[in-house]
Length: 295
Image (tube, rainbow, N blue to C red; front, side, top):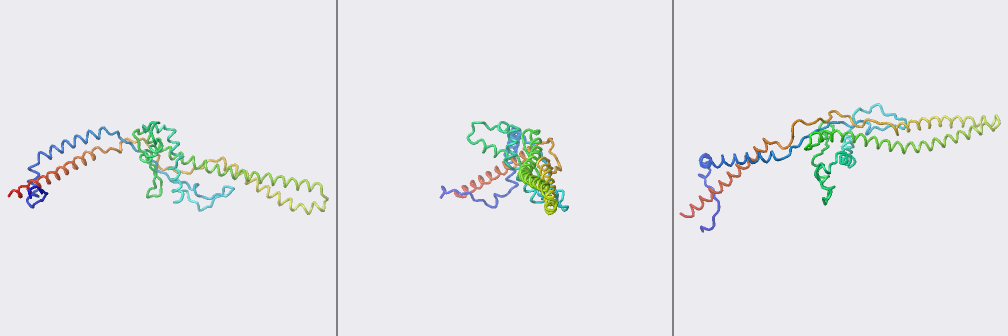
């Protein structure tokens, strides 16, 4: 039936040269219009700038130190795979993000209004989009920050690395403070015990004091060891260690990374031309089928 029209392409409908010659003007006009529109749209899009930091985890993240601060001689300068994973976790942590959020007033910077229904969800989505911390093929850690303000992008990338180092030091100090409290308690007990032995030695006869003196010497030696541990724990609770080794600090970007206007214009123009060619192919196929139905 003539009402059942369906597209059917015959061999002569694929004469591409004749096809493009017949519709050359349409392709030219469509290409020009698509290029102009995509160029205008790309100019309306605010550019993004990117800054990156390349760093390695220090061996301080994973090396096991004794109470006196002694480490194994085989410990390398850089941390291992476990240290790298820990560093990435800390950089991607809520502590680092909250720090950036407060320091750079990101709610206002990202145009998130206080009256939004889910402001924290929107903030997380923005930070996930513009801030990345990943492991490279060389075992290093790469921090990448994109922003419409090139200076913000640079400063935030450097601050993410610096804040991670601060967090590791805070964790180390907190753990050292717990150790210091316990050692201080044991040190005070040992001092009282040694004083008791001293008092007993002064009040005993020579023969009895001689038997007690060896015990007193042992306890006094242990008191000296406890004092050393106390001083080391006190130092550990106050010291600052390098937990990151920065290879390349972020610098202010000179060129934008998005949008790539040339690529955007080219892809848009090619897409429009391909779509136009498809539509014209279908239209010609329908015309040929109708012509056959009339015969």
